[in-house]
Length: 107
Length: 115
Image (tube, rainbow over the protein chains, first blue to last red):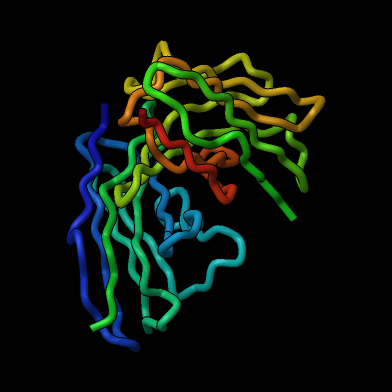
């Protein structure tokens, strides 16, 4: 199975900051990488697919990059509604594994 | 608007069975692959199973293989997850999710396995 490792596991930032979350795959997954946002008690929301393509309706403050084994999610100009947990997922091969999550908290 | 509504969760004893359903609307269900993803209390997301649009392709996580069965009824716009031989570690919120990569999620249904 492909292991997905996110860093950091948690992150404190202030409103207006720009933050970057990293996701590393244990083997080459090309660009078959998605990012999700989840708020407490809510279902996840799809943000990005194919490493850098935004899902419909997702604001351009979210951006993704990377290919192969190393990927990043960047969120610019943090707003209160952006504080949540973020997950990456590879869909290159089954089982489609998730990273362990990165909790973004308000400083 | 895409809507995915899960149902069928509840409390079940270890070793028991439960069948989850997901009612889909707002898109052409018969054209899209579907997933089940779960989340244990306080834990991260775990992909559970995928079924192709015509049911010809199915995949399972190792943790549920041989115990869970994914199926769908395209005439009823419904996705199912039959869960047998349930264990405490299967306790989770179960989400149905559309497409690969996932584009839409349901609100989830809680399954609690406990005596």
